[in-house]
Image 1: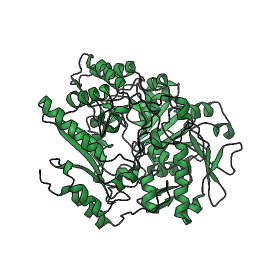
Image 2: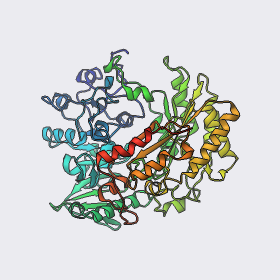
Image 3: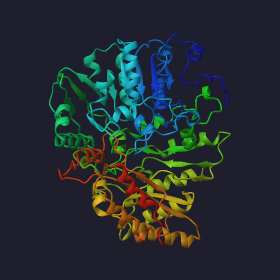
Image 4: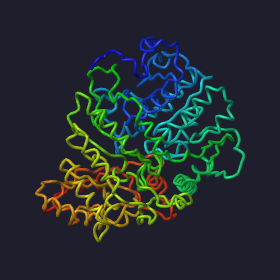
Length: 579
């Protein structure tokens, strides 16, 4: 790769900044990831959005926090604020396995090397910046900040932690997908707005010495109450989850022992098609910064020929953080925007005609919204699929079939694979396909958009465990396998169905895992896509793991915490099954 700085990227060094003729940046972004100018990387998206608004943005990727802190000093003081994120992943999930063992590699670092970001990166970076530049605002965001915005369970310390705002000393936290709040913040700081004005911006959180005035305030159990009483923490989470999945979200506040409050403002409404198109139409190079030369960045190699079609997920799986960060409501790009991005991809010399993933968090939720938005506006349901598909949800796969047809017309595209997960309960029930379009979608997906391995996620076989996971009955997978086997036989294909499973989830016992291993509908399937449950902040499953309580019902839940017995559960995935 050409190491010469092209001038169409945010500078990552003072030399690059000088080539642009800047004396200093307006905004400096610090990230735990290598800098890749691709819309799958949040730092690139925020940088591009701010640049599009006319702001001068510099990026400091993977700053060295162990030395004399020269990376934190090199650009000096920005005109407006510092922005901080840990990268695409929570730094603790990035660093440690479910058994709390340190990982030997990091996919978001050149050559996959480990050790280039600290534990709790948001807190470490922010603390350094506030010490060096106490009068300059620090704005934190991304997955780590977003999912730690209020009191949360931390698996690695095995205790409740306060909002990351408290530990980091940051001035403002942006949660969720941050394009609109970060632009509002930049505009407010640029206009010299006072703190009162800044604190009215949607989709931010901050620390205050008093509760905000006005109606509609929801006060959660305090941090100290949650520490003393696990039932209080379960109630704390239940209140957040209920309101986070709604159009009408109140201002949320939680108190701390020093009398201060963490205040969380309501989010923006879901993006319109025009708004989300505008984000993806920005001039990303879709490549790593030239500073890395020919170094291999594993995470980039996985997504460099991928296309995001939409955001959000209404599946509501208990262990998943997607809805808590991206939102429950689907925000889809137009077909034209997607086609434009693919056409630009075909112009690259290294593109060989294969799109690795035409998808999203859940690939087949493209353009799926409530039939009557007025019903969605007053609904507090946490999942539109569990325990059954919401009758107001539009589950038609016609828009995705149309997208497939348009992509197939693009010169230079040989195949467009779906690498993201799908929800088969959106097109199938125990009796078969919902309609003719659902059947056509399934056939098109299997025959033309998988590379021979269709990955799905039943997660478990036993009803009690699936109930705590918010996943459909395993009989649905049984029907899927029947339809899959019939189709591949009919088409003469040697394709595989690859199911994902989780062991040691709250509610799961050794007996449940033994039953899973003996399930007759898994005969002939190699259970390679398996994982031990890892509690992550702001999920129902992590709350159950910590409290032993189902936050929805208040019932006690069995939780396996002993590492030896967790390994015993996982070993059932390796048991040989007779075909």
